[in-house]
Structures are given as structure tokens and as C-alpha cells.
Image (cartoon, rainbow, N blue to C red; front, side, top):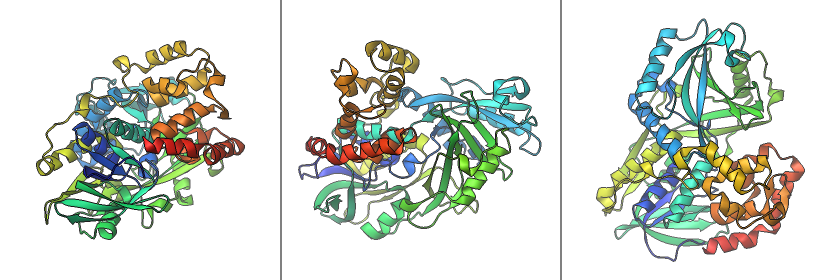
Length: 511
């Protein structure tokens, strides 16, 4: 179990989703000695099953979540600057028709959306004539008027990996496939029992403990620490389907369903459309969550209400479901449950703090981390203040956050790399693409083509730098190549990990 030499750490973070990775990064950047443990892979659960949006949450205005929306709108632009390779602007189309929220209400909501967060990078909302624009072409003729507004798209699981990478670059130990089996207070510290994938156990001492276990936040308190929190988590399932693309242009849609919920239809890797999400109360093991037939039918009905091209369950090429660990605000409607976050800070007994995270959304993870460190500062005597607001994520130090210009420069630097591959690598790794391509001067220098568009050089990098340990880590979290590779190609990636990756993995864990 690499990454630590046995000495105490300042902060032990349990949970390798976006909140845990963000807190580990912020804390490491303030000079704290940090260890993050994740029982599976980074972003294995909620943080890789989102709608892939960096957004203010337009619909939250209906529930008077003004503070949350304002914070999310501000963060939207912070993140666009921090990681322009994995976060990009989107202009949403909101069709309007009979029986929907009144047009005046939509205009008012969009006015607030434009102005609550001090918008600088993104264009203002507009009203459009769907009968004469490309956005109206795929829609049924009943939808003649619509509105546009701006938000952003994110590669959510890569966002987690990059936060963890930045934390590690600043000295944090990132231990994946490592479970915190138990923790107890002892002589002013937390003593935690960690168990690796091989079953080996060790103890680690920490001045503070952060419970960022997501859907397992309550379970970790109840079972692993034997503590009762003042707050409770509410699990809500959100499911998505991916189908061949429903329209030719690059603008996503936000669709008002007949139950007053909204469903997104988002261009997804050029060939597909991502449709979601649902809001269904969930009970059971969050690790075993699956989309149901009722949810599939619901999402199909929602888009079929709008598009001429009809979607059936047989069209689905991929689906996924995740459990959102929302703060339980006692709302009777799952869609109305707050997406805001709440902290439970326990400093009882001998003062070693325990901070548990309830709720949150991917857009506000950086601010959540900043607020978490503010809560811990008086207890842990942290000297350095906030720093992440103007700091880029690994690979995101692109001049003027202009990804288009960066991509052109990248193509000129490696003219021998096929256009589709260099574009994917530039999006995934940004300015760190040179760490993947290294000293290579031609395609043969990248090693064996393990699968179409996937070479050993990239796999070696992902094992060495981004904690990839299985084919699934690469195909579905560090990338979405699983959507494009057939079964034999995916099998070759599995074989590579079984045969060639162990030596690379051992070398990586010693660093």
C-alpha cells in the first residue's frame, strides 16, 4: 500500500469522488499533509454518472435556491478558466409550447440566471424563432418559439482524476482500492484502519478526518466510526440513456416534461445524444444501482414529446444510473430536494475533528472544498488561505482558456498523429499531452496499438499518473472509449491490464 511512510498526516479524506478529490487538492495546496482513500476507483460512483454539466441549475430558481444558483453560476466561469480542455461552453435551447410554464416566467428566470452570477465569459440568453432556425429543425412543428441560455459541459470523471492528480502533485497520497474499515479517536488524532485490495491492513494517524463518502456518508458514520450525525442523507437515483444523435447541430436542449420536471438532450461525443435525468427515491446498495425499465420509458417519452425522430428502448447504445447523496431537507418531492451542501463538524471528545459532507453538486465542488477548509482552519490551525479560485487544473494552463487555439498548436506540434486521436488526447490531457506522447516521433513510437485509437503510451501514462488499474478505469472513467470500441477491442484492453500492467502498477505505487 504505497504513498505513505507511516508518519501521521494532517488530514485523512475518505472518498474519491469530486468532493473528496477537491478537498484533498485544496488542503494539499495549503501545505497540509493529506491522504485520500477510495475503496474503488476514483469517480467510480456518483461523480461519473452525472449529466456532465457545469451549470447554475436553472430549475433551482423555482425552489428559491438563490444562494446555491448564484454560487454555481460564479463557479461555472471559474471552472471554464481552470480546465478549458475538459470543460466547454454550451448554449442550451429551451423550446416553449402550450401547457408549459408561462413565457414571462421563463424570461424572468433567464434574466436572473444571466445576472445572479456576474456572467463574463458566456453569452446572454435570447428568444429565438424555432420555425426558422437550425435548432427548430429536429423539433415537432408545435414548437415555434424558444429561448437560449448558456452553461457548460464537463468530462465529470476526468475532473475528479485531475483534482486528485493536482493534490498528488502538491504532496497528497492518493490510495485507490483502499477502504477505511474503521476509525477511532486516540490521543488527539484519528487512528484509521485501512485495507488494500490485497486484504493487507495498516493503521494511519491523522489530525483530522473528512467523510466525503458520497452515498455512503451515513453508512461510514454508522458502521465504520460508530457516530451519529446531526444530519441525514437522502439517496435519489438519476438515470441517463445514450442514443444515436437526434440532431445535427451542437446545441443541447432542455425540455419541460408534462410532470413539470426537465430532461436534457445533449450532444455527446459527436455521434450520440445523452438524455437524462430522472429523480427516483433509492434504497439499497448504491454500488448496485441500475436504470429501470420505467425510467427508460420515461426518458423516451420525454424526448419523443419534442422531436420528430422518435426514440425507442431499442435505440439505446448505453445507459447509466447513479445515486445522488442529497442532504435530507424533508421535502416530499425528490426533484425539490435541495442540491446545496451541508457540513457536520464534530469536534467532541479530544478535539480531533470529523467533517462529514452531505449533498452538493459537481459544479460547486471547488467552493465546497474551500468552505470545508474554512471550517477546519480554526481546529487544525491551517495557516494558508484559499488559493484555488485562480489556479488551473492539470493540463488546463491554456493561454486565455482558448482551447481551439491550443488544439491547432497541438496539431502542428505532432502532425503525424491522426486528427481524431490528437483531438481526443488534447481534450483529455490539455497541456500535459506531452507527458503522454513523450519523445515519440511517429506512431510506432507510441507502442502497441492495444485497441483502435488507444496505444500503450497512453495506457502507461494512465497507470503511472492517474491510478488506472483496470480496463474499466480507462474505457469508462479516464475516457469514454467504451462507447466506440467493439467487444474484441475491449477484451484486448482487459488483456493488456492482466499481462502488462502489473509491472507498471507496482512501479507507480512506489513513487
